[in-house]
Length: 82
Image 1 (cartoon, one colour):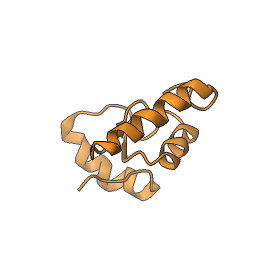
Image 2 (image 1 turned 120 degrees about the vertical axis):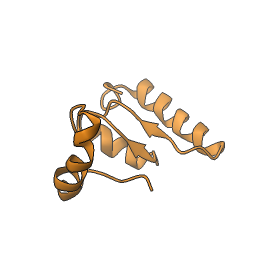
Image 3 (image 1 turned 45 degrees about the vertical axis):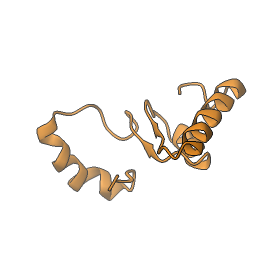
């Protein structure tokens, strides 16, 4: 994930994986998102869901609901899986 902003081969691999998942009717989750540039690339490729430090550091289960309600949704950085 780290080099998709700068490496054409990495972008091609990620694009192929997303397309393969979708061709099998599988929603694709990208892990390790650290920058807005990575996120924008994945959105443009049709990736379905995202996680990584761009959104939040790892937090204990007890804190996640509070984090989602107070911070992430206000910033508009999250697309919730329903």
